[in-house]
Length: 595
Image (cartoon, rainbow, N blue to C red; front, side, top):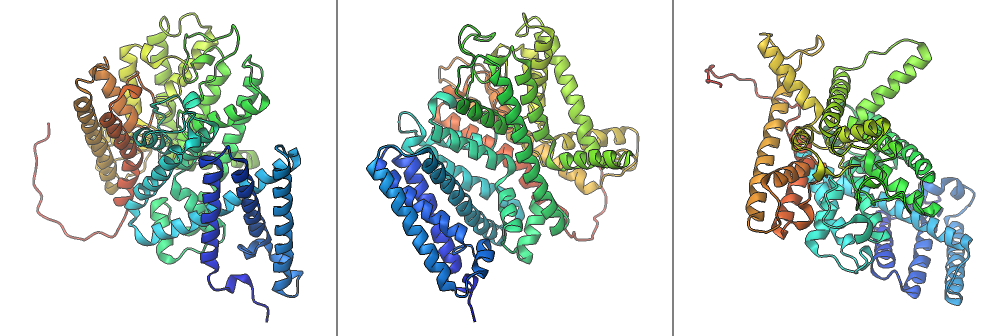
């Protein structure tokens, strides 16, 4: 009888230990000692070995099932793998130690091996992490704990010497940046382009991607699609967290989320590359790719982090000392592309999937497919907010920050200025230069935020829509809340009211504490600046009128907690108040005076 490696005792432990080893080597190689050639050579050799182990199926037997069938005995596969590993490691060590340089082919193979080993190790961790979380935590606690762990790990990575040019970053600033990236906010205490190295920027980008989709989205993806069998308790927890009905629905949902995300981000990066390729930026092709990918991911995830690209030479843009995307306010394509990515990310994956299904149905049959009430409500409110925001921006800034622009530039910048306060944080005109009335309108948009299941924050468009229709139904003396001849359950109305109330209390508390922490700081900012800052943090927006970099350490901690509450609070409250069996009893009714 031939035994497979699946049945070997300790196989799961072996996979976990190998994953730990790979991640530790990556941290040492890229984060702690990136300049040491000997460390780089030794770690690369070990990582290549791990990559071959993964590929050969010694650690993941299913990955090499077809290879294994060609051998009569398992030992021949092990012998073949061992010889291959020895040859690969020896060749790598020999070339590296003999020469300071290496061939492009060898470098490509090494980095491909590193990427493959990293993804395989990430798969192991996320599958184990997802299992532990689902088995040990209540559904409402899954998101807070998951995000807290990711933020802590991101803080550790940003404190590594390789993350910053100076080689060190204090824990408060590291935690602030990690929280801002993971909660896809965009508030920064130091310039992302100049304050972080390529390694640090890569860490920020990964945190944005994980935070935008949600750590449990990744864990569920690996659990459902990459070989981990979820038990009954895990399946029920996943269903509650992801707001699904069945595991089969959950699988379709996860496939849709991953597919939509990487497709839209890739298309966005390509469009940005083509636009920047026609601009006098003075970048290498590699730099253009890096800028395009970073901004596409940041925009779709509604993060607002930017590498502050500016044109080279005399075409320095319309504003002095430009920040974020202000250097390209004169290029309508940038604002339109970034704005559209923001809208698509903020709509939510359920809406994107429904829109895709509707388009395919129309192409195949020539008939329209009826969308659900939630999809129609989200699309209606989103369109109304975009048009209202554009009108407000044009009215307030036509002779202000938009002065001197062409009509196409004004329309493009007003479009971005309309969608960005609903959790994105990108800007092509200085936020501090906007009219006070427009900034107050921004506060309202930041509070509303994006849509359920999207990458943005806020109380969500559907919450505002349900509460508005509840008021309309009440005024019209209808027996229940009605939307397009459909009745909204009273339980869902209570949930939306709870989310709205929780958000209001959190925002008010954040403003009060921030004003208390910053009084006497001598920064020169007024009360409204801190009100705007708190709402930007709670709505995970990232826009600021200036005080972020000048906050005291206590002010930074308050903003960290506000960003965390804004990103996690509504979703955690929704998970905690989901549909469950209720006790059937009723007390005598009484009246309470309202208003």
